[in-house]
Amino acid sequence: MTNRHTNEADWHFDNTYIDLPSSFFSMIDPVPVRSPELTILNEDLAASLGLDDEVLQSDEGIAVFAGNNVPEGTKPLAQAYAGHQFGHFTMLGDGRAVLIGEHITPSGERLDIQLKGSGRTPYSRGGDGRATLGPMLREYIISEAMHALGIPTTRGLAVVTTGEIVLREKELPGAILTRVADSHIRVGTFQYAANMGKDEDLKNLADYTIERHFSALKDENQPYLALLKDVVDRQASLIAKWQLVGFIHGVMNTDNMTISGETIDYGPCAFMDTYDPATVFSSIDTQGRYAYGNQPPIGGWNLARFAESLLPLLHDDQEEAVKLAQDVVSDYPKRVEQYWLNGMRAKLGLFHEEKEDKSLIQDLLRLMKEQGADFTNTFRAITFDQLEDTDLQDASDFKQWYEQWQVRRNRQKESADDAQQLMKKSNPAVIPRNHRVEEALEAAVERGDYSVMTQLLEVLSKPYAHTPDQEAYTTPPPPSDRPYRTFCGT
Image 1 (tube, rainbow, N blue to C red):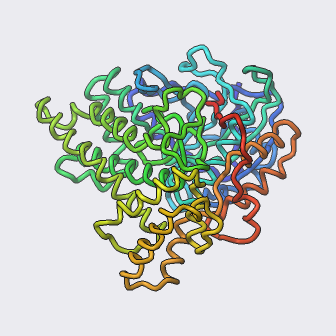
Image 2 (image 1 turned 180 degrees about the horizontal axis):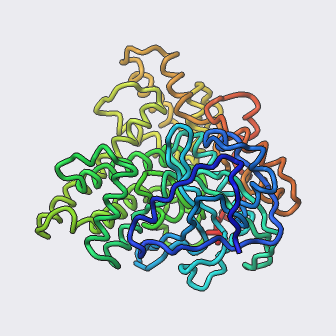
Image 3 (image 1 turned 120 degrees about the horizontal axis):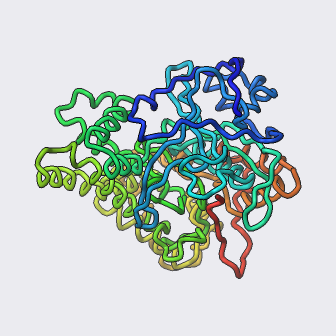
């Protein structure tokens, strides 16, 4: 049984999610574990949350991260939701996660604190509700890298081992990730409300979401239509940012798309090395539904499902509601492309928009694909005009492209130094290379050596620094006759 205890770490919990109809959640405590140990604590995040990191590292703090204790004032619950998984609709819910509450930071920010891997819930569907160490550390590493890259994301506050074995394809050490998020309201939460509840339940969820994330919309004449527009815009911006750094989410099901616009659920995610829009790493994505190049349109598909869920709130007349929703969702492709084009201009040191920019960008990407060029390193090389470091140097078409790019840059009033500074801020020197992540996870899981991961996290924390100590982490993986594969890690 989970215990309540006094709060020495300075948690400040609220529990507004329970104001929603009871069908949206199940009240349930985390399942205690045998002998938890702290493997990593995010001290920077803890400080921003206003928490005492010494207490967090004590037996009391570790007990909270493990789900053995929860601070006074919390009302733990598992959230219900639904979702389209690879295009097929199913009822879901937090099958191995418990939301212990909403922490209020010293600056007044409200953030969900969730334990992932904390045991069975009513939504476990036969699963054991547990998580293993490797995937929890992986989510911690990738989410911290995304945060440093300037991409909205959930973050890991801590990972603890449980002292228990979890049976997957083999016996693996159990672990729990403490995840911090603006909230865990998903497109799938609205799908759940639309499919399982009454229109009144859907309205309650929409009102709660607006109050929590979009308070400026409360006075709009059509607040639910404004909500749809804002969510579309946030997702367009987010997915464009993914594309700009070569991030591949791997499982863009509707239950993995947050209304707040954060990246969530780092299962089979990975970063692209060699540029190819067809790149897919997930072992379960055999058709490439969620390949790198498909992420923008899949985002639009997911948003259409969100819009369908909102129809009863958009207008009393069904046809008019559909028209209003279609008008908003049809604007998404333009929005995501504009965010992407603006980001690509910055990666090329271009300050202003010109009509031919899109073709200039597409020509470079075409050359990168034809030559098998590394995505991150190509942009890093042209940032510092070190063309000898690219796979494009000997391609005649690239020389022509380079000249066109120089002509385009010379038409802007900003100096070459200004352009390079813009490129340095837009082109990371380092990303979490898949082989480096695997190296860190193997050392931690197989040998209990966390030094490799600690060093990797330090390097990834300043991706735009372009310092000599990052050089070793810029190298692509050695050639292999086997494609890199990622797994959901459940």
